[in-house]
Image (tube, rainbow, N blue to C red; front, side):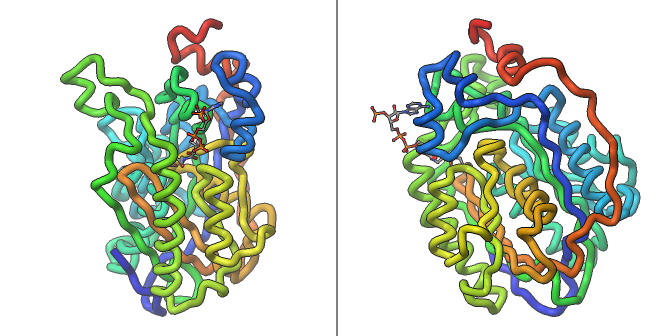
Length: 360
Ligand code: UT7
């Protein structure tokens, strides 16, 4: 699927925010319960620690949304649409987006999108499309995941990779030069089995022994990710009528530092303009791009007028890219001191609460 950049009505990002659960799970913590070590995880993936949530996915999504709405100085009642990109919803029904609306208010449309780790780029593209079509003026686009619920601690190749968190943006219709200039979304359904969580859907209802944990052929995903994500980004840049060298900032899905480095090289983006936080959060799936984007704006990596490439890949196998021209404003119009209840538990203790046989 492709969408052309133009001066026609499209979506501009006017608010941004993130929520990272406070409980940290370090590589050494993991090495105390499974056969792994900090050196392997750091050199193979770039991950040093990740967060384990003590609250639900929708609580995290709501917290991130509050920050994004404050940054835009808007309320949820101003939103025509709330989309949450997630593959780890609280329930099958209702959507996480409906829960966010329950907490924050409003009567706009709500829906979740599952494109696994590509979900945020997909959701941003859908919101942009609805804004371009005139069916929405403003939307809250959130990526939120609680993948710690699906960790298989007997599989060290996947257990060390994932973490929890949420990020959000507020988008608004504009016909100005800023905003989503193009997007490019794809999927290769022949690769469904290389990254899957079987038992969390209805398969698990019919057969009790279907595992509810992440099952991934890491090398295959890696190989496809490097090729596909780079290709998708180049097409999106071309769709926007731009050149690869025009990209100022790369916000990649945070799955593996080696994949991010390869994509940065392909897009010729200087290392200081590649925002990475994988060391702190691991792979938070659909939440990783909006968390990274929010931090990159707050830390001055995204500047007024920056051309930002957001690129992602994930289960499906899905991949996609969105090219966004940042507007003039990089400051939050408002901040919120709204807080979720804290936890006294460590990341390891929270993990033990949901993983039997952890031996704590
Ligand atoms: O968001 C999309 C989701 N997924 C991804 O992006 C993941 C993409 N894939 C990757 O990032 C990488 O493939 C991994 C980080 C998952 C694995 O890195 P790799 O370089 O492909 O390692 P490997 O799976 O080929 O394993 C190499 C060795 C194996 O030992 P032998 O067979 O060479 O003796 C593994 O058993 O490393 C061993 N190993 C570990 N050792 C210590 C695998 N996991 C671990 C571990 N600790 N956690």
